[in-house]
Image 1 (tube, rainbow, N blue to C red):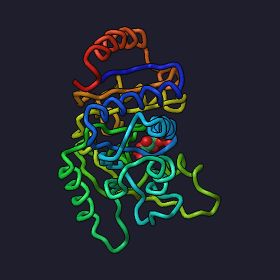
Image 2: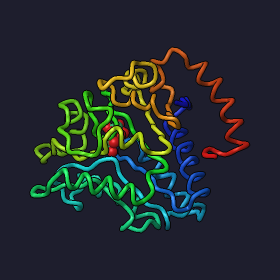
Image 3: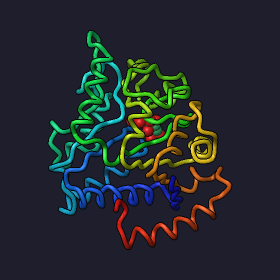
Image 4: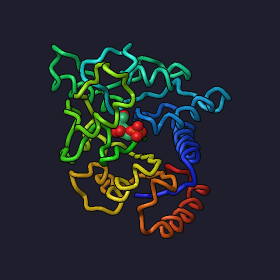
Length: 266
Ligand code: F6R
């Protein structure tokens, strides 16, 4: 796991965008894994800017989102489809038919829908780069603590903490789903590259557990320790509970030299 500590959340977004751009420059038909939530919004703004400046095209890109609420209509402003359209898809040249979210509605068999989502990832050739945020409780996607580290796409019940954390996004009295379909941890680990972004003090504890804690289902993000090419981008606040920040900075200097010479993905 490569840990990169930057001064601010906006630097995290700029750096993440550079990595996405570098991948698409190298492989225009890249398969991106996308996330929702507050953290990637600044990244999506950067990508939209690059597209508007003519420096990046998504015309051949396919995307697979990590998760979607159970039984939510795509035009519901709370749906992750709506979020992605609003923050990214409608501003860039991606083909809507190449954007996938793990949906499941009442009356559909969740196992069949989950298997179809996994199959579509395989048919696309697998995910090249999965963008991840981090839950304050260590979740990735909607893989909450105690999720199997070998899990695949499936319907999950959300924990009370996640429901509470996300309640800020819902109006008083508005229906808030308590289940979601999410890529599993094993599905995420199948991605060729992982890029997790975490910013802000409220992520500091989960960041420490993810990077230096034991590999444990109690911190699903600790599964990144098992991945060959996982990069973690942090701002100073999110990194504030780590003891060995000087070591990470030192390693990062070496890696920056290598990346400048050989690129991020060679
Ligand atoms: C959403 C997702 C979640 C978020 C996490 C952090 O697609 O995968 O795991 O990444 O809940 O959310 P924010 O960025 O809002 O703190």
